Length: 229
Ligand code: B12
Image 1: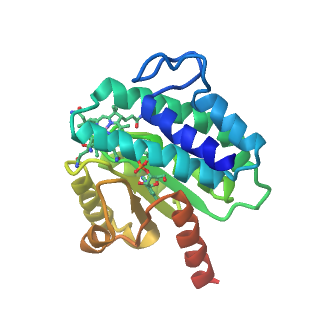
Image 2 (image 1 turned 45 degrees about the vertical axis):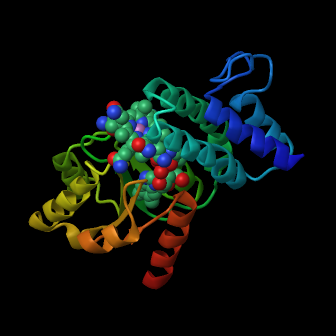
Image 3 (image 1 turned 90 degrees about the vertical axis):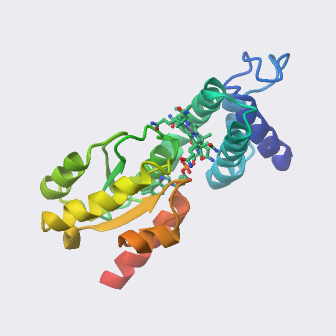
């Protein structure tokens, strides 16, 4: 049963069906549960939010990306899927954020200049809030100067950077250089993520960690905290 819900969730992300009223790419699907209804059913079935996100929502977006690469999908199709995932995250948000833990530290996060992808960044923000971090989400297409200013003024313990394009990942390296030039690099631990980046790239530009997803980020941050204690 749980497996069926997760499989349907992934399929409906691929179909770009936010609710039961949407037709979807294959059409004639209206009337059957969409991403919103399936996310609620998954929660009612006690499926953990981590499973809903990784095996349903993110797995579906992965396929959407592959279909875009092979030109089976176009931008409006990607957007429909993105909106469906956003609606699912609105349902999961209160559950993921519910935490009475004392703040574990300040985390500023941004999608870098030139990049407007925000689904992954938003998921990471929500998960980190739930894990007890005070999150300052700067949004998308954030200029490097703004990021430097936030590190100087807001003094976050951690800075998270997201990039999904090979053309914008290079901005992460520029941010590291700008932090160095302003004498701020050793004031903040920098984590990067997004489809365009990797462990190798993280090492190349000299950030503290590359994270595959928000759950990984929580583990990395906890390890930093333990090392500090
Ligand atoms: C949805 C989508 C869009 C939507 C974005 C909507 C939105 N509000 O975000 C729209 C339609 C706007 C879009 C536009 C474009 N897109 Co687009 N898009 C995608 C798609 C299908 C899914 C991205 C996504 O949301 N994934 C789901 C989330 C959950 O995953 P995620 O972002 O990777 O995040 C997770 C982890 O990576 C990690 N993470 C991410 N960031 C961070 C940060 C930190 C600090 C940490 C710790 C972790 C972390 O944790 C997240 C949660 O698990 C991808 C395909 C793909 N496989 O990535 C293409 C993709 C990224 N897009 C692509 C392209 C080419 C474009 C456009 C240039 C298309 C065009 N010709 O206009 C534009 C660029 C616009 C711009 N300037 O940014 C290419 C990039 C290719 C490349 N190598 O550069 C991809 C890979 C598709 C493809 N296969 O060709 N896109």
